[in-house]
Image 1 (cartoon, rainbow, N blue to C red):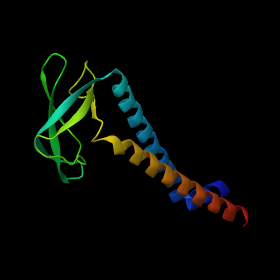
Image 2: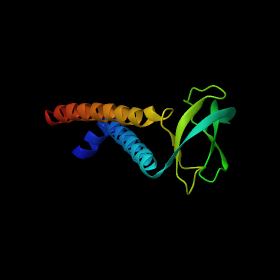
Image 3: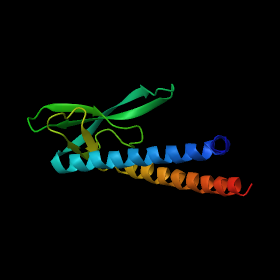
Image 4: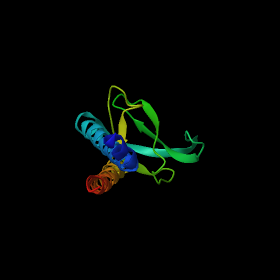
Length: 144
């Protein structure tokens, strides 16, 4: 019964710990995927050829850049960037892509470099904050 009381009092602390952990895992996973593409992928230059208006799952409209590059067989590959990429038409950037699946497995080294760090450090912040609050609740709970 006491454990349930402690858990109910510490729900938001546990939520912070879980969300922080998940964000850190996502950042580490993104880092691993980008590192793998950097090692086994083919490096080439992609050019911004346009923009696409996309709608997120919660109904927010975002504009994402559309990049085009040639693969090792000189096929033109068109891919959409991410919404936080600030680009202009005809701007070029380095892209690493998997030769087996260039349409879906790629990464822009100069456009997407902050994502992994952002997720990791925001996750670390929430994880530490959650543990601090959880520890404070634990001390207060045991002093009763």
